[in-house]
Amino acid sequence: MTTKARSIVYWTTTILVGLPIGSGGVGQLIQFRANPHGTVPVLGYPLYFFGILGIWKVLGAIAILVPRFPRLKEWAYAGIFFDLTGAAASCAAVGGYGAYAFHVIAPLIIAGLTVASWALRPASRTIGVLFPATSGVPA
Image (tube, rainbow, N blue to C red; front, side):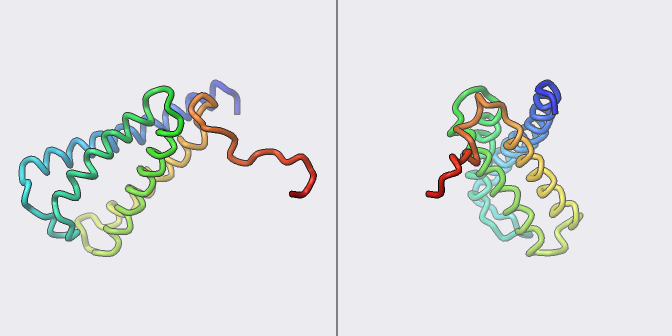
């Protein structure tokens, strides 16, 4: 893959992750403020949990979209991945939650985009090499 193509795919996947995560976080914060003592009956989580997630989602989206801070980006990518796979598992566990398959498959698709964005980041956005080359001498 050429450098230009890699950059285009990186930014496409990053935006396709950052926008839904960030806007979802804002939505969770709005819901929390509108009903600070309620619960989400289908999933069984207290509403304050979604307020906490909302804050972290907004911060995570910002972290993966802005330049620099590679260590922060690593944590943000991990947190977004855990959030999305946890959302899919929660929805699968309760079954029958609205458009059931959508609430399980959609987070998994965005989790896949998160992994793609993470894997395609430019060198300026990474901490180091994932698999360092060996010298051929066993350790």
